Length: 93
Image (cartoon, rainbow, N blue to C red; front, side, top):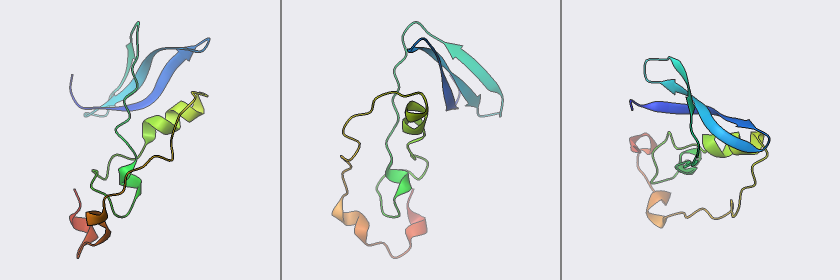
């Protein structure tokens, strides 16, 4: 499948059956499934100093909260000391 961005999940009666995604060409698409796994990619992009890509901003976590999905251990964020100094912070991936 081409590059996509999850915009929201599809759920009914506390059961997720897919998601709404935006394709790289801007088109919106509904994807349904019998089983859905939400893999969010992290929140490192929210921090000024991070080894994560800037686009990893926890959007899937926000979608989870919107739908009342229980999240666990959200305070467990690993910060690597090598990220605390950068001559030019814009050089981060």
